[in-house]
Length: 68
Image (cartoon, rainbow, N blue to C red; front, side):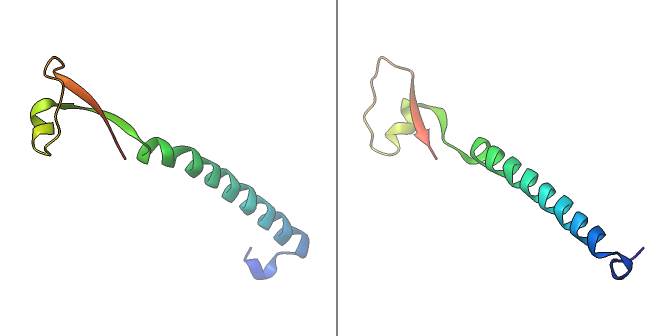
């Protein structure tokens, strides 16, 4: 059956189902985007910090740096 052959009630039901699907997908995107692209804590060695002219504690072999 093509869309031209569907009744008004069937079309309204189809629109409702599609809107529910869109809402579910939007919720998934809102949940997953921060997990994928949110802030991360990465370890950086003192040698790497020296490349940027940043002084680091010589007692600590690694430093936590927040990157976005």
